[in-house]
Amino acid sequence: MIQFVWPWAAALLPLPLLIRYFLPAKNNLQDAALRVPFLNDFSQGATTESIQKNNISLMLLVLLGWCLFVLALMRPQWLGEPVELPVSGRDLMLAVDLSGSMQVEDFKIKGQTVNRLQATKYVAKQFINAREGDRIGLILFGKRAYLQTPLTFDRKTVTTLLLEAEIGLAGKETAIGDAIGLAIKRLLESKKKYKDKKQSYVLVLLTDGANTAGEISPLKAAELAAMNGLKIYTIGIGADELIRYSFFGAQKINPSADLDEKTLTAIAKKTGGRYFRARDTKQLKKIYNLLNKLEPVEKESKSFRPVSALYYWPLSGVFIISIIIILMKLLSNGLFSIFKFGTRSISSRKYS
Image 1: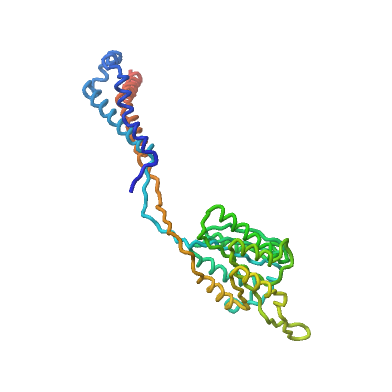
Image 2: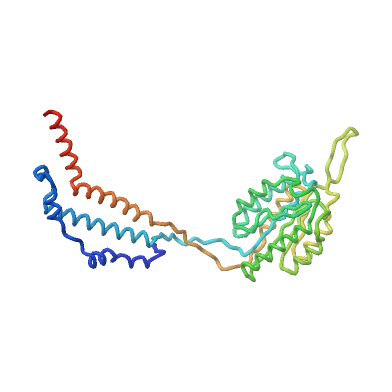
């Protein structure tokens, strides 16, 4: 359907008629005809009757152009069909560890050995793409925690910024408590902005170590999260066994010896979430698939109607009519005839 942004502009339509009524034009047609020199040279030009018809045509074109101008001024718009927006009512933050230990290569993707961050990116990308209807934010943490992406429906941007993250970008240490604290801060801002009691707030925190930096302890941050309704799902990432070859032969080591599973479990328990252990890419996928099955809080569906501006169509008509009027005025004033007469005079002088 068509709607007008400024329908009151239609009140300007009778303006030319009012001007014509209160300020009538002076009829100087005869005077103009008497003042034209060399009248015989214009014997094939316009007669008085043709001039009158031409004036009527001009007036109709002016009125049509005015109507189109007023129509453009009313700013017509085309409203498309309503489009439903999938809204789950959940704000979901991803907190990804970028500390130095994330460069340990104990994961495989399609048979190729990769480090922990590469495996996280590979699986988290699929997880983000499946979160249609959630507002997603991204926190990157190491020695400090940074908000890389605020809560948004733009999953493509979140994915892009996650893929651009590099190990050590936020420092070599691990500040789990600060990452939770930053998520709480954004949660409170969201509550203040939207004031929706049905909103669900979730933090998915992925790390491969223990808290070694930051201004707040993880358990204290978890208590604050529970008080503010933030549910935390923690994921401990890293293999239990890794074989390294050296001059003395093969040696088995535990690359996840620093993983503080006790604290991660306590964080999840305090906030009503769960702790997951991902020892390889396959397990990490299963964890994200399980998180994808979290039941959304039901909320009234939202819709919007796409709007397309149409004002440029009548405005284009005004431009075309203006060109036509200018050409008609040039013809009615006899400029072309004068040019023809002047050319003939020059030619006669040349051959005389």
